[in-house]
Length: 289
Image (cartoon, rainbow, N blue to C red; front, side):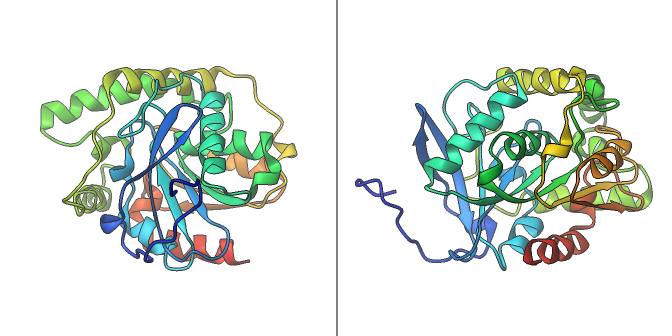
């Protein structure tokens, strides 16, 4: 935005690792965000997972979607380079996301939500139907979904496993322990380090705790009426998701009126990152329809 509140066009960025981190103010919060890809068409807003900052998105997924769509990623309130205090409910995070989207002057978007981001996406699609054209949700589940209340315990357990084995906890949380799963995890974690300059700062323990509380509450909620979500939805996951059990993806696809389900073999929570090539191809086809 310039000083007159108008959007300024920048040279088109095609690589996430080179995307500039910008800030937009809304509701007293400075939201940090990055954007890349063509300026035309409906933008795809990425909604991120537990503990994630801008640098936790797989650049192969971001760059792949950005070959044909404007992609916008952002830090939730109080996370990374965004200011404010992190909410402890999914509903409040969804309200923040809508506020951020509107602050960019957008009145129609596609959503790509991963894990916690997929929960946020469901609330936005339900509460602000006119804002959302299509939705891609991966590694996620509905309110009250089976096993979601266990995310806190699993996250703590695998954080300890990571410390004891000198590995990133995402190696355990996102990927299977098979040879292919281990290799995919190492490759994914290496890709997250491709950006070497102007990296985002890690989430604080306080914000991480607030997000864990929000997910736990989501897992304890009464199931919501998903039949009111009429947008086309692509649901994706790995077949062996430990964090948000894969049966939740099947449940979502069954209860959403206009949905399609993709399950990746020998893959866990991070199935869309393990199979990033196939996922991007499928996502682009879905968005182009």
